[in-house]
Image 1: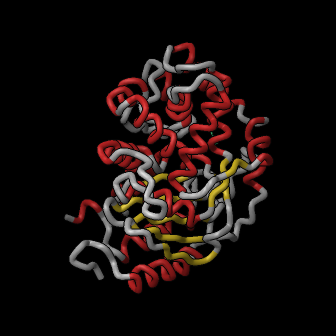
Image 2: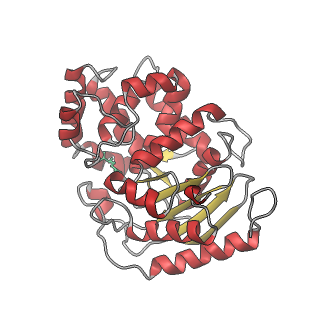
Length: 316
Ligand code: GLU
């Protein structure tokens, strides 16, 4: 039940989270990502759900404290950092703000668009975004990104050495993307440095509760409701959410907008995030992915909470 301020009472959110967890557990199907060997080994039956509100409350169910790989969801937080640093117009002209309509690691999308990535939430655009972080060297670039992720989460996050090693030793396709960007003039530092840092940013470990808190910072207009830190300016949050609506759920972004009606982002580690601006963030986690690369149970959990709380942005 919504109060006059548009917030929800705690009992209602708590019940929605528990119901969503039960609904997600009923969903079968999907497979762990295995092109990154580390991800294939994560127990497939894990399932966590969490909501973090813009006024600083957390609700959780299931394995919401288990730490998993942030993967593609990291793209949102580096986008936020770079939007702050170089401004939204520069991000749009250098990287783009449109869906590619093609898989997240598509080389064809780059070729079709003269080397312009189109979206900071596909691999090419994310590698280009990393290259736009103003920094003197690789370590300074990485440190800015990790600090940014940590500010969103409200605690110091850490990279998994095992995951990073697993990714760095198998990321041949992304290396090709980095060099293609470079050859088109759409990468703004050394290609292998950009790729190194991009791969590290995907190797940060977060829990479902962390993910919900990171999202709540966007829901709360850029201020982390748990630490009070302003992480991104209010005027930039709308651009980040728009990018999430356009390309956050891979080639199923349109389906997510159609059915859930919220800006979202998923990652091949099994995380799914959705933002109800001004209200709250919903996070779901479960490793098995569908054909599009989205977590089957994570998606079901997020959709269930959004429906129970009537959060669809297009509902009026
Ligand atoms: N590190 C992964 C990659 O670049 C992230 C992909 C994803 O989560 O979509 O392939």
